[in-house]
Image: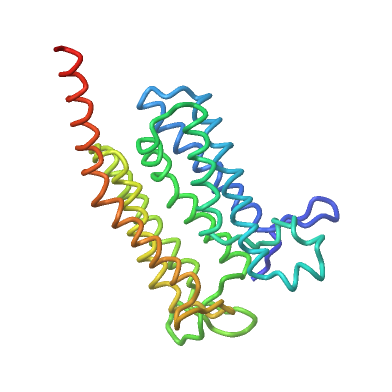
Length: 258
């Protein structure tokens, strides 16, 4: 595979950077379309998207730099070379969530409906990003003899990037289907925290590149388990909080009426 898509003069344009840009454009188009159906102004969606994108890029790159610090310490000029790859999804997810929370507070937007709204776009952007990994030749799979194996440096490997892209596209379809049925606020975000880590847990067993490991699992699998537990906690706690909040509201109204 050739990681270079084309050249502008002498400057190479890499598949990875091109597909990451495509992923962000696709997410913005999705949120604009979905927001229009809900009566959300285009300016709201563009502002939200900028916050989320900044958080995602900074978080994803920071996580990758920290995970590969010896190499970057020797060549600090490479820290900003996003076009050549080097983003860790969970780092980007955490960064996007943090800036999303800040955005919600600044704009005084209800947090959980906003989280559900943004969560519908995540699998779509992630799927496109993984196709970028495939074209770039990074995040490659383990050795295989399956008929659909792909050659990486002359060695037949699982197209693990495409496995994850397919899983994310299925998840995207499911999230959009459920969003239209208006689950309780926050539950769709919780469901994403449960289902994507399941995909990642399985896909990691087919990865062939060097992986950080802890407690017998790859670090990505360890983090997947953590996010699954958070998602399960939200799934069961959100209804109780909503009920409690309603009770407080009703009690306050009754007191005011008396």
